[in-house]
Image (cartoon, rainbow, N blue to C red):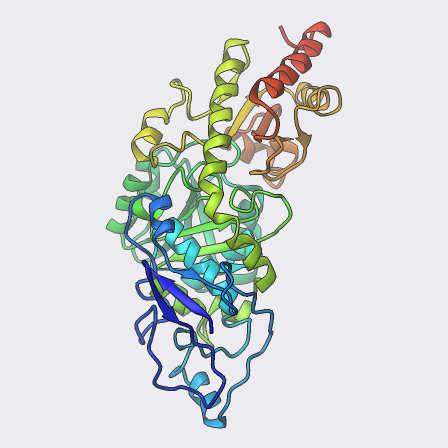
Length: 450
């Protein structure tokens, strides 16, 4: 029989082989909510993950079994009516259909909620599906969002073009570091959401999460933070945010082989998003595959180790690049405008993030540098995305921020030659640094860098 371990205790699983057990013990949540009380309260995400519920396999395996079924059977016909009425649900091992809830995906959701310190989490097929579902749940037709003007290009396009056209939801863009501007753009009774990235893509501006949350909450506005760039480094919900979204495809995945997302937040929100009649997740159906969920759940336990090495190398490279005279943007450098802010907010021992930017001023110089780094010295790959074990490089203005027009890029601080680097950890640090120096030396020989 399957077993469930909760905070050091082992309980028999809920495998049903006979008539439906309608009086079984509720092992991990209260009956009124699918998600009540799932997240430990520890401030350190690693400590929280270590004390969270552990799922064992159906036959005693140390890893949970993969529930690959799309649909689930019942032993008695009356049970199905009771499930659809909401009387019976996954908290008592009753599942209907995997677009609704799936045991394997639910387990990953518990891990994500624990990681971010929220009551609940639901995992989706992509980061963009997580963001769009949250915004459509929190905003009705005529709704209003205040958002940072420095966002991932896809998110910017969603807010600028798609939501106004398809949903009559409008957005006011702000300099997220200008708190007076943020406060003035939030209209109490009209604005539904304040949306920003904990560390902006690609400029690495660090948001003052506690202060922004206070401003929004004073006007009864929900704070949604994209924490894709800083898992483990920052915990937005512990700093005051209401909802945290992720593209799990990046650092959390770590292998550049999976597309996935997550919504982490209050149980009331996540339950409402799964409502049969009004839930954005339930009705739009950005369902995560159970096999993907299992794969990701095996990577979260070593996320902290990976993040520490990403951050350690990024800090070392940024410091050395600066000494060579390059224009480097990295929150770990003391001259970064939000260096002290990040030190104050960050979880200890995880550093300042795994990304840095080098501003080569022109797209031509940026492309030359990336070409030499990839094709002559093997420092990294020219590719979008981040969080891979190899270093990934892209010229943001012509790639992941290409959805912004020239004026929007200028306001966001994205120069034509800004090279975003997600620093990997493959090879030795000195080996990779030597590869970088060789590429830069070639640039100098051609008179492209002095």
